[in-house]
Image (cartoon, rainbow, N blue to C red; front, side, top):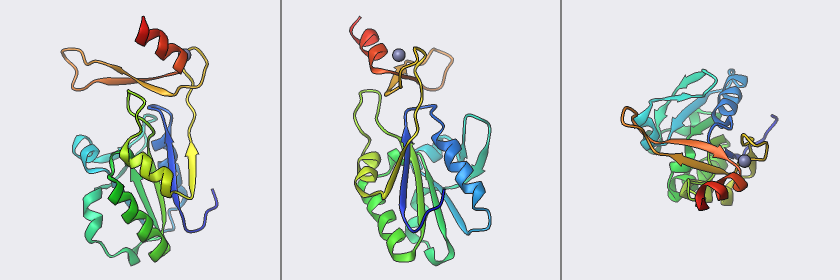
Length: 174
Ligand SMILES: [Zn+2]
């Protein structure tokens, strides 16, 4: 992707390949000075930017960038950006414009109740480009919902399954 100075939001449902796209963009720009961040809440859960295809890169929690000197960077990558606050996104936008830095964020569009995350709302408002990464439901339609599968006794957390609205309605109202 060719881009000038801008804020990019790459978003979609779970398992759509958003993080893989972020890592690909990161690797493509290996000659640039790059900062990699992840929302603090997700960093505590896994302190790496990791895609389901097995690729991963190291990162820092988002909060550390509040006190950084951005003249050292050409690129900022932020994974799990749906969990940023609105003020974090405004901060990124300011940095991007002021310091001529390309900011590439990736995140989940909405929660399992189809409500947009705060970080996503602000990114839709402020990004110059948004890239919707599509994922198909098992029935072949485009997935738009992250269906919550409650954790089993031996699992650490709930799982989420990307499904289309037709399958969602069937599951929800059955
Ligand atoms: Zn479906």
